[in-house]
Length: 357
Image (cartoon, rainbow, N blue to C red; front, side):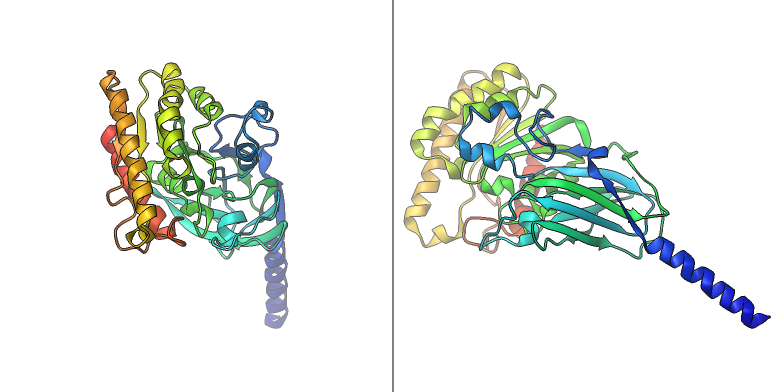
């Protein structure tokens, strides 16, 4: 009798284990997506509105297809979380990890902060991976950060067949008053090892507020179309302008005031923060680079002072001092940031934002 009971119990355990081991996928289109400046895009997982396709510079338009700063919010009681995602291009670069370029990055809400869990590692243009498993099957809130330097055609979230998945119950990150950040490849996320480590995504977690990423690699060149797009967000709590590495001296002096004025006309009281470029570590030896970046920082300060003299009381300035530290360890290639660099710049921006507020 005891033997029969043992076999029945073992069989039931085996049966339940196999049921729980089955993964069911849900189209992520049904869950909250944060980090977009507008919903008027050609497809869901991109950053620029469709109407800019014919008017903005082609490189900016194509970079807008990258999903940097976008994230899916959901909750589930599953003991495992999986993801399927199809990439737009399956990009690869020689100075950035594939996981940062085209992976996904999962965090969970724990009491009062977002806790990193594990990244989904890409294997090609189409990907399917169990990100985390063997968890206690309790309800948790999640955020899944999307690729920084590639686009997403489709995305599905996988959970246990016996579990539920729903839209978030907690209003985190707060989407009512987003921060919009305009900039370059550093803003876009080059070269974070995983999507959650770009400085806009770190800021979003630190502030628990939506931070919209309008970084365009090599193309943060003060395009007025982007200023007009930013200006439409009258609900923004702040605009951050971090474009210096991508402009030359002429562009800086001729376009900065106009770019700012477009935003300011539609948002007369919203704080605008100008950010100097970091002092690239290799400029300690490369004197030409040092002269170029220090001259551009000087010109930016002059443009800021001109605006301030005109009576604008809601503009602010962040110098390059200690933006990424002074030990030279914050970049991959002398320019683009490591995770250490992104953490340091996010901390500097966080302190400045809290001071302004």
